Image (cartoon, rainbow, N blue to C red):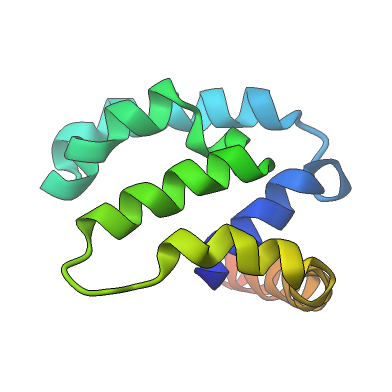
Length: 121
């Protein structure tokens, strides 16, 4: 759930991290995935059409989009996951999770940049 919470904050504050508009970015990413779909796992092939149609990546920024995501995940689990309560928890603890995201994401960007530089050498 924290992964999707972080996706929420990234979508919500996208302009802090990228000059490319989020909607443009998601459309570009869906195009790339669509081109490579044959080589991806069956599970991805199954959910990708819905992901693209409902623009999950873009809609993570709002609670309705998150509710759809968590509801779908909850239906696919074979155990009681309580994912149906994930948005409620996020609403109650929004500032807490936002603070963690704001600390973590710049570190992730720094690490990724260093690793990319190593690979390019």
